[in-house]
Image (cartoon, rainbow, N blue to C red; front, side, top):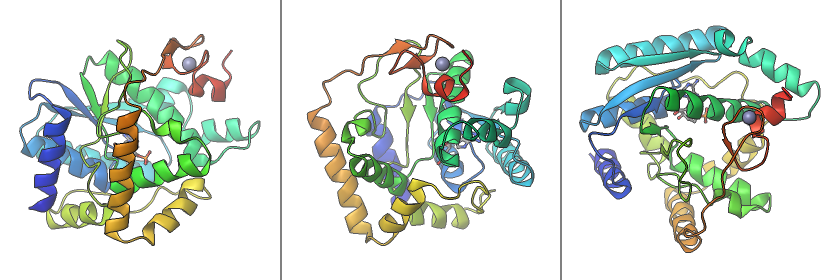
Length: 268
Ligand code: AMP
Ligand code: ZN
């Protein structure tokens, strides 16, 4: 099957080793589910990592799907309960932040999830984090950065994070980087995987949704061209290492003195 062949090619391009311990960030959605399914099918050493965001019914459904998947694949599952660990649900954390700053739901959630992933996956001593980002997601992010006038924000993107080497930063891989979203959806249905197909109830009104509408209107070839050109462009600036600081507040790797998560939560 085409998607399997393409993912194998991506993994070999990344140079992923079968001895490496990979934690797959599982949301319960189709993309991360297919990512774990394929990595397991190809015999990689994977475990699951799920953040329970405690957003009511939706989170319950996601948790159930993730548990089913890990049982099916016979892999370990690590669960991070945001309420237990950070004291509040994502909805509460978000409202607290939004009472002071005008930021969109997805922007806040994305920053907090990334922070948790790096910290926890490092604590669990894994070598890499795998996420379910697909070609459409990546095309959207690349265009969003260009539209905002900051293409350099894409400099670390790729099927594997580029130009960051730091012992506290866990490299992230995206095995579905070259796979169209529609193909991922079709594959997850064909394989009858336990997937929550409904969208996150809080994913409203984000800039990404506007850009997604635009990308959805493009042909498959045009979407692939965006990614191919992004790869070519980024190849040219690949040599520049991103300087990593450690956040003054939490000690996590950060581009600035205070990381984005602490900036949002203003814990200082
Ligand atoms: P999103 O930020 O929702 O677009 O998700 C991008 C990727 O992050 C997904 O494909 C997953 O690999 C990962 N992810 C999203 N939500 C969670 C979650 N609650 N727990 C673990 N990983 C997640
Ligand atoms: Zn911090």
